[in-house]
Length: 279
Image (cartoon, rainbow, N blue to C red; front, side, top):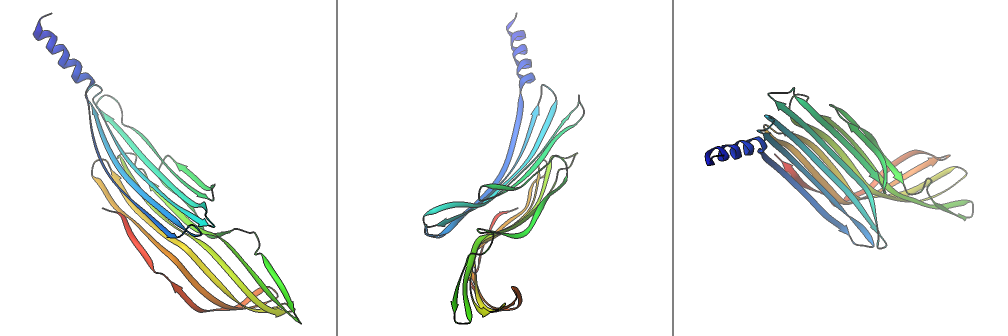
């Protein structure tokens, strides 16, 4: 075999096995600690977007992929013990392969998972455009019923009670076009560590009292992202946190039904905002 023929064979083999890959990505994260190890916590939010284009000269095919990932977690610290109070994870991917020799193919999926104190309370997955569902805002209490300590003082009863827990709500939807390597993600969520303490006085089903409500590490997350392997990235991911808020309420109960309540005073540390992504 001549040198020129050998060189041509090597060049042809290289062309048959060559693939070109181009990748573009953006990411952002936010970490914040509140209080201390005796009473406090921390939050961690991260988001990333990636688009990849791979062209194979051997199969004459081009594969374009769009990926979006989002993770938000809240950790609570009480008496030097740390608990992962809530964790939200969302991933979405859309891969489209076009070729001059074969029909266009698509592989798309999106998952959304919400965990509370280590337990999964919401886990959804879709392989086409659709809603990932959501959960309405509600509070998960540490105790099913509020612990209380009644103390009799003559004809009256003074009752001390309270509870703690986590309040959260979230919703998400995803669009995975069948003809384009694109992910459109819409997501919102909120969560907070809550606590309340009450003192009431009364007799024979009639009670008046004061209730102190506290919210720690209240967070709001709003996401609107478009990841397209052809046109790039656009959208926003906004994160806000309030370290603490307090509210003092006066109330009146008749036969264990609250018939009147009013806020006497309220105070909050104010929200701190951060744009994780602004494209």
